[in-house]
Amino acid sequence: MRLATAEINLTALSYNLKQIKVLAPGTRVMAVLKANAYGHGLVKIAQHLNDADAFAVARIDEALALRAGGLTKPIVLLEGFFNRADLPILIANNFEAIIHDENQLRAIETSQLDARLSVWLKIDTGMHRLGIEPEQFEAFYQRLKACDNVDPKIKLMTHFSCADDVHSTQTQVQIAAFERLVQSKPEAKCLANSAGVIGWPQSHGDWIRPGLMMYGVSPMINQVGTEHGLKPVMRLKTRVIAVKSLAAGEKVGYGGRWHSKQQTQLAIVAMGYGDGYPRNARDGTPVVIRGKRYGIVGAVSMDMITVDIGCNPDGISVGDEVEMWGPALPVEEVAACAGTIPYELLCNITPRVSYDYLAEPD
Image (tube, rainbow, N blue to C red; front, side, top):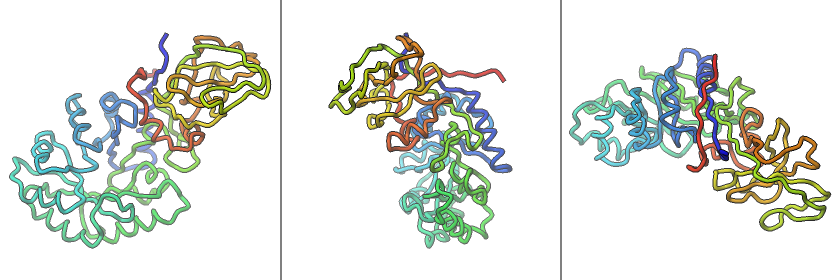
């Protein structure tokens, strides 16, 4: 009997990409695949994104894995490169680099390269992470345009810090700052991540960078993917491995965090923080068994979780399937119960979880 399994619905993935194009018509799509495609499987996901115009990853090893998997689309390194020795690797594999500091620019200017490097110049408009300062923009831009090692068709970008909150003024401030700097430049521009695509259509520009929403999950505060016409791609499931009776007043799990107020039954399910399920999920965090929601009780263990199924009128038994999140239970809801964000839950799936890639008929 297979236990912890992540079902990946490739039909839903394709559907979401089409929906993204509806939300941002006329833009080119850079599909973000960093962190193992947000826990969904880097190469397998990329192989089913035929309508994407480019891929984006954080680091060179991720980009190399895509090339080894036979992917030929442009690949953008969101963190750029960190060593001059990386430049020949970028050139040989047709990787595109985001440039965000002086050290990178100087390395490009002073290296001998076999071809020109495609670059994206990143401007820090308020995220205060990677990116050149606004006052550096013109000098960086002119140096890149003058550099023989750089493809003259450079692209310009920034990154939002608060786009998930449509009530915040920060995103509009960032858009305005970016536009003031680049309005006279003819280069292609990219501002919108998933939250920008959904919440800030004025930021769509020439390129968009959908990540989380591509997997059917909402990047917006207190919303779920279905509210944006998206379908969950991952269904994390397992099985009931025991059902036992519990007397009133008995404590459950490590530390005895929860105790029963009345006689009940528990379903023990084969899932835990060793599979990537959040250890700090609170009592009452839902799971779905036989189409009905039940709440977990007691501390999440490495390999098991206890679920209060009451007097068990549905006859739950060993072998029954348990959905931990998926179409019947949004991962956004589980994340809220664990005091975290859905990004973390998806990315934390561990190697012992099996993956099943499914394609539903059209």
